[in-house]
Image 1 (spheres, one colour):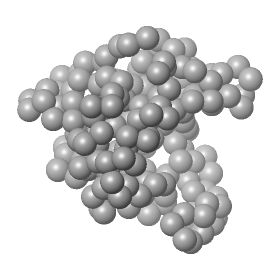
Image 2 (cartoon, one colour):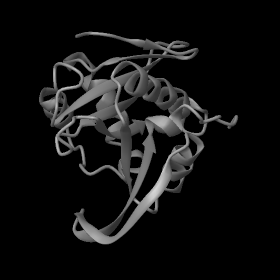
Image 3 (cartoon, helix red, strand yellow):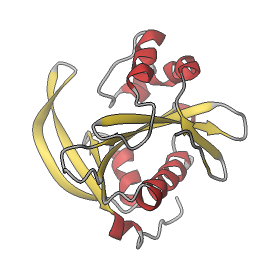
Length: 187
């Protein structure tokens, strides 16, 4: 199932193998990569990520990767991963992760993209709950989620072995019923 989502400034579509070089450019940047679970040392690392991406959206226990294309210049500026969790038996929960090129930070692109994707996840895919796992040092990401109506549900101390050290993990969540009531303030 191929689809796309349009916002005022973005085209959001499934990742393709042709996106590898563009994704590598921003995902290999040390500042952007700081909070990602994987370091990317070559384009082949991104090619492998794309290869592991599900070919269809909403398949339990898979990740489905979307890319963000800036309409103004046609550039691929970020990506959003959706992990369709199989652990609830009803397949009604999704984990979300996102990465944005450094030059596009702080300009509302992530809010715009996530808002449209969340609307699709809750309205079209009829999911009940979306979660996000965040490094507590990633304050910008936590502010983004809070702006979108997510609430902090847990802070696990040293629960992840991340890049050679034990790291904390903060879990945010948003229910479909909460999404309907979210009034997203301007940035």
